[in-house]
Amino acid sequence: GFLFRSNKKFKAPEKVLGPMPEKVDFKSILAEWDQTRISLRNLLETFPKDLIEKNVFKQPALGRLSLLQMLDFMQMHFDRHSKQVIQRI
Image (cartoon, rainbow, N blue to C red; front, side, top):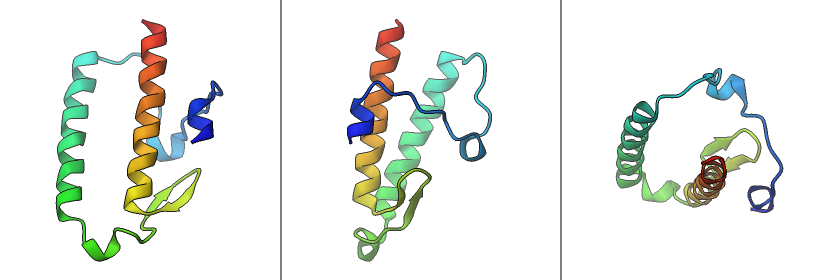
């Protein structure tokens, strides 16, 4: 959690995410975000209960995480980027 609360910048891993675009279309980003949320909800609704505490998700910087750890990571990541967006407005 400490790294997400710091002001330190990290380069997005291009080999995992692909190249970052120079410009982004806000409406496209919102549409992708809506689809991502639907996909995440579907995953959570169908995720096997016996795997909830197992480290089944691979996160490039942190290694393997459980479902709950991954959700915590995603929330911290989202919060960090939300602050960055607000600072740029």
